[in-house]
Image 1: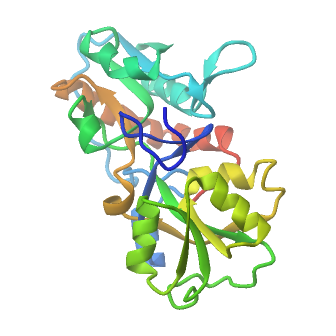
Image 2: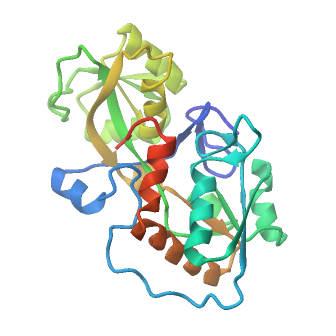
Length: 291
């Protein structure tokens, strides 16, 4: 898989051991409340009436495949046990459906092949819903997405982050990304400083060469809580979500044309939400809210 600021062949953003999957248009307070009621990991479920239970006749087991080198979403722990946000979510889905569960790790390049060959029923590996991935599989509704966020040094006095207050401010951003395009359209008065990687932008912020960095909420969360930041910085403003610039989030992939299983998994995801189980998972695996 590729490094920061790039998209690999399946359309998932990577940042070392952190995920970059972003969705970003600026939300007003009312829009944020209406569109993102889950402030831990935003997804499409808003607590509305649950969909009717689909026909589960004959469904006794679900076989999931995932990747194994992307903590905290899927990885082997110190005892060699496959674990992580995606793994626990898969097991919660099986529990909601009252079926046997199998979650197996395969190489990233084998995820869709496993579906096509009938070796797995679904792939749950933080796979970005994109034009390319949709050509290879069908997807559930997104089960998470991340906003774009600004970060600044803690001693930066500017708290009110709007286009007018950021005029002529130096903002670090990874070049040729949706984040850069978003800033150019909605924050036209800023002074953009382009970097090849998110790590380089973050280092420049810590050093004081830029006043803000704009990027993916998850990637920034892990940096803020990691050792390289030395606790220098914090989130400011936002969140910002816009599928045009940052994509549609991630979903569970199933074999192309398997609409019945897609509907079953969407139903199960709602049930996991309704039980409160979904909200427990980010608190277990993520160091802080990125929303």
